[in-house]
Amino acid sequence: MFNLFKKKAVKSDTQKKVPQHIAFICDGNRRWAEKRGLPPLMGHRAGIRNFENFGDWFIGHGVSTITFYIFSTENWNRTKEEVDFLMDLFYTELKKNMKHAMQKNLRYRVVGSREKLPKKLANLCDELEEVSKENTGGTIVFALNYGGQDEIIRAVNAAIENGEPVDKDTFETFMDTGDLLPVDLMVRTSNENRISNFLLWKLAYAELLFIPEHWPDLVKSKRLWQHVLDEYQKRDRRFGGGKKKNYSGKK
Image 1 (cartoon, helix red, strand yellow):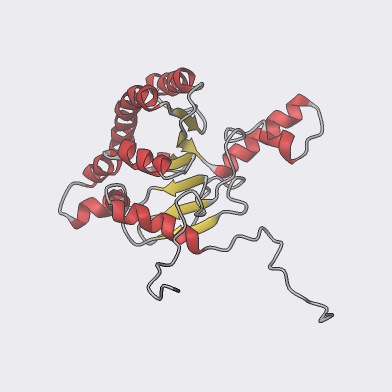
Image 2: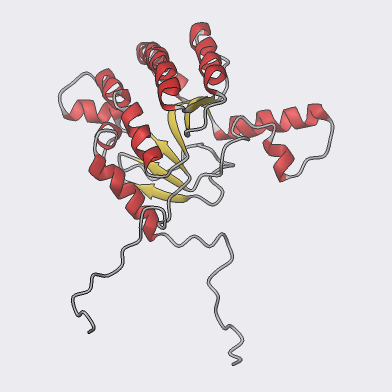
């Protein structure tokens, strides 16, 4: 007998569309702090506090690469006090990430120019990449002293110096992000609706999601983490191909 109350089949997590590379523009740290009557720099500390749990959750739900935009080539224009605070904060966080990388079998990458970074931070970036390069559990990427235009210009100059014609694939080998997957979904927090010179090459066909919450709110909320994946489920990615239709009208 037909069961009128038979449950509708639900897709398993493995059947759902999962973005393989999510890139986050981590915006609104200072606004988050000011809203709570805290010194603006405390927003940066709150924004970086839960990175590891955040990354673990998304990788546990099938995402293979996560990139965080944490300091742009333009951020050097901020006050010396703020820049120095951030450089010390990044150094402390990357030290923690070294242990996390080995515990969770994660590969860490730090993309962007090492120029202008404090020497001890630049050396730590290299060390973190080296010790984790063979790990296979997922990839965590920090875009630090990174600018999309800067990356492309440096890649163009490297290709010219190499002296051989390039196509799309060979050009990518000269880029900081050349070994990374294309971005499937870019998320920006704090009601800012720009890409701000972020991963210009890798964002070519990315879905974009702009949310009102400030970064420290997103990084600690599993409800919002699930919202990010749910939003991606709704997107229809066609990569310029369009849906199949009978344009000629012929039967």
